[in-house]
Image (tube, rainbow over all chains, first blue to last red; front, top):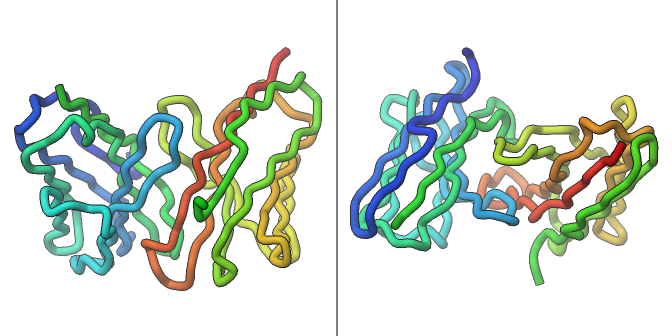
Length: 112
Length: 111
């Protein structure tokens, strides 16, 4: 499979725990995006990498969220001290162009 | 006011019908426009770009009206497989954070 891969597909965690998600983009894509989507809403921008540099970060992203893309390859998104409001689908996309496509299948996070 | 607004629907139309959705945007400086399709519990997929001159891809036609700040998507001869949520996307110039997704319009095609 040469598409965007995200792991895990589902994550259930207790409030207050830390979680980390991984995204493996298409290998030649230098752009990588993270989005969050809740039911009935469109994807909401979280952060953007070009190669290994994190160029943009949503002002809505609290300091509990951090993302990395070491060596411009895979990326991780970590949420510390999870809250129930963090429950959502976390989507990753990679691209060569200025539009996020394709997306991975997402990681569905449930905070209980 | 939201930056990108869509009628959430659902639009429930019979197979073979023609259906159209609009999407309005608030930022007149927006540069690029797209339609994505999202099936239930799946990731969004790029359906088509929207050019100033309009864009047609088979049964799908997308148009841009900059003066009134809206884009439209027309689906002709609708198929059962067209049932999905259609997301309007508006992008600013060279800024990932300016790529704004609408909340989507849900379309259901009935036999």
